[in-house]
Image (cartoon, rainbow, N blue to C red):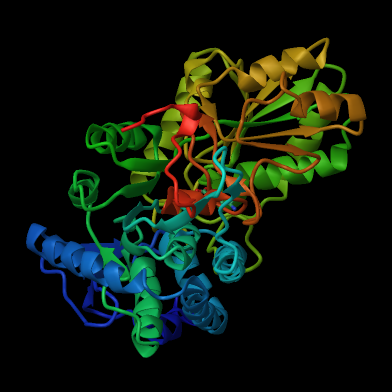
Length: 513
Ligand code: UN1
């Protein structure tokens, strides 16, 4: 891997033997057992981190809570200025960080860079936002009264993120939460601990150089038991969690039990509808990138292609043909389109899905399989596969985090396609390929897609940061990133001020003493 500059990248990012959870400023050390990070690219050990113990966590939450009290006093535009400086560092370190993402997670280097670009973009967004944390003013029903609302910082935000976007999802949350005046505690995935350490190093350096209080950016490391320390902790008013629906249900219950807030970003089962009026060339690009990009491990990955019978064979042939061009291999090599799955468990899930779809009566169109031999030593490289299937198959109803695409046929009216598209428990992303305005508008209408994201003539993945990101149903209902997603990181307060010498009651109530 050294030929791709990994060693240099690690060095530049300050990732070394002793990579421990820290808080901004002080160089703390987690003291729990060691977690080793192996690259799915070549199976080699990249480094180790220590897990956060209960005692470590207590230190982190206390410092974050104290730090918050100071941070919230800093005017929001000044907090924005520190985020701007953090972003300067991201721009400077884009290549090494993108490389580490690629090496530790396995996505292509291009996608690693793209992920860091999302961090840069959300920070830019947050800097502007730091001057736009607006509330409304209302007209009071009483004379001589003024009524308005304001947004105050919320407190300590707990962020639980997944391996597949090991850095961007953190920044979607932190960049906004920081300008909103919150302190953040991040538990990244135990499958990608070193990218977390790299990000935390950058944040810690920028925060302490700019005189920010200790504890505004904290990193805790370990498995779900470490996440639980936050979900059950009343000192953490908001938990933002990205991951499986199974995880989300556990987190939601725990946090709701103490009436805390959650922002949940869970599984998807995203489909593209291809109508008789679709542009086939663009459909192929959108569908293939959506299905095989990031080796099918985006929550927005295209899992289902719902194709009208009139164009079914044409679309099928074009997609199958495109799959023959896909190059699978070391994701740091820019000639390859698809890298490895994250680990061998993911490979098992992938194989299980392919077995299952055949068992249920599906027809394999593009054969899958685990690659072996030179360059594939990690055992995590698989062939993207396509199966003709039915929407009601259990495996099709399930999100398999792997490059398995299900081809589904519809006939007659678009309504039938929309019914199939909505006929799953998840509701994250969706798309339609059509040049027919009526079809496009019906897909976006109240009777159309039930997802949080609905696109026309682009695929299901690769959302821009400017929009609110998230989905309905079992996807969890949360929205993060752009639009007004910032509001969840603040508490809203309604203020009514009486500047008269009387005290009139609302609703005209008389109360004479
Ligand atoms: C995720 O997979 O958790 O829309 C996030 C996309 C990316 C983000 C995916 N911008 O595909």
